[in-house]
Image (tube, one colour):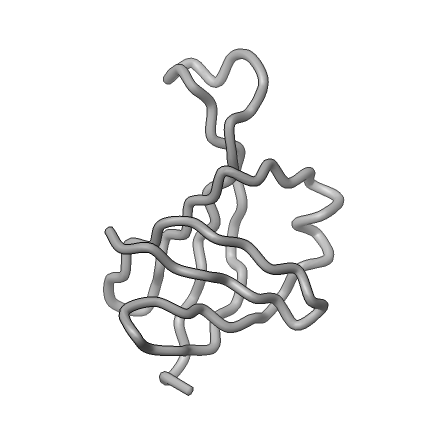
Length: 86
């Protein structure tokens, strides 16, 4: 995993960690996003490892402190489809 930045076309900017692999990237951020917020996010730019690439948000799910998904979310895990590097 490496540190990265995710900037959506509507201006939402997130920082977090990125796990790159194949056609997808997993982006984890401490920012808690609601379903309403993630529903408006579509495409953006992922910046990691001195590279920039266009991505499409596939899924978003809350990160919880325990494995049983109880309590308040601690962040958000985003699955991003990767396109050709910008």
